[in-house]
Length: 189
Image 1: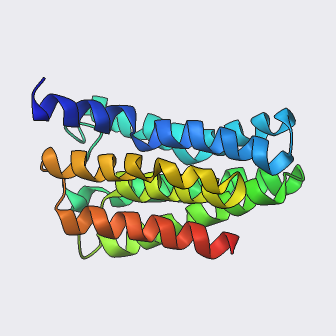
Image 2: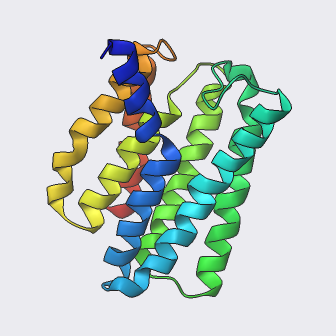
Image 3: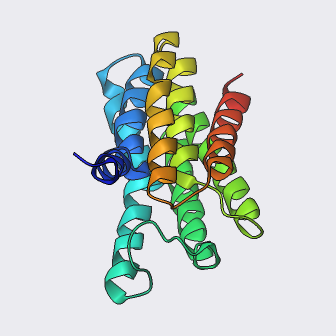
């Protein structure tokens, strides 16, 4: 298998939608202390990952972007606004539904991270995939179990794949991962 094929597989399997679906579902269970948290985790994943990914796919089919990666940073602002609105809506639903504190905090951390991504993106391209991957692993390590630190090689794999596919530079993936870790850990500590 070629390096490009491996990189494409890694970037597709560990894309933000998938990382958020798996990570926030686990986080919902940990936050609730039981399987009843699955619903909260799925709501979080819907708002933070699935709705934004659906919007990106819809715009891609309309011809706005070539693919889900939206490599031209000047075209990314609408995506960030959709993410902010979707996470904001999900957070309101969680507050009204008395969601467990940690899943609510995760949503706020993701919202703050998205504000940071939007701000940085106005001047410089930053890796959203790396930010999300690192935020998810950091949240799981803080809320669920420190053993989730063992998943950081997945973050490195995401960063590598983004560079190998020439979507980002090493600095852009490192900055994304740092932002994801910083916002996730700041809200939980």
